[in-house]
Image 1: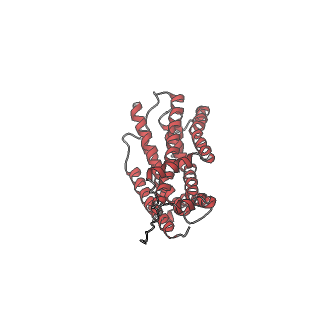
Image 2: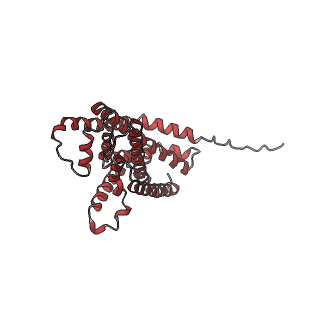
Image 3: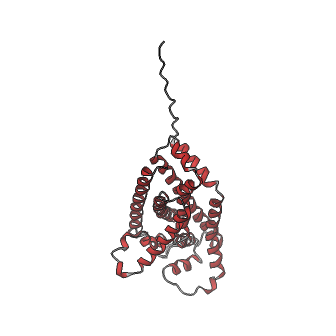
Length: 285
């Protein structure tokens, strides 16, 4: 009698796009995701309304953020940039941290991450899908704020109020190009925060710990940037170039600060994802 070899069926290979699509469905079906997007959407409208109400009291040019908000009073181009810049100091980083915390620590808490690990999905592909999900959510958040800011600015000032801080007037396509550049640059900064948050999320089972860590890090970095005694550390701090976002409102656009911030963000992305992968590849479950 001839013995018959019994071979175990091969596990079906799940395509990357299918995993990514499933991740997006999981992200954008969460009620808190929709709530956060709604809150972000009303920020430019609230800023625009507040500026319109207090327009008569804005007598001085101001400095830094004040100058940007003052210019947004009668400038449809400045309002979306001002909304992004204000939110970049706290709200948007927390949004990115929340998404990264849910991606790994949150699923580990609810037991759904084990299903990923038992399925034919490698740790590297798992991290890639989660990182793409966080990146897509942060991009959607930034683009949503930019769109609402543009609409609010146009309603307040019309298409005639599209001028830069240099005094030049831009056409509508040129102004939208500047807003798109600002949205992409802010998104890159959020990807850097998300990468670091993913590294923290891979080391804990508590999503709130990820959010608190990013909040604490943002505050500490901001304080360190104010201390001249540690100016040698400033080039390594991610928020160092965030004030350069206002350069998008100049004509021509100075590239030094924006480029420096983009390169720094890319370094944070590489380091953060490397740490997250190192942790995922060594953990048991």
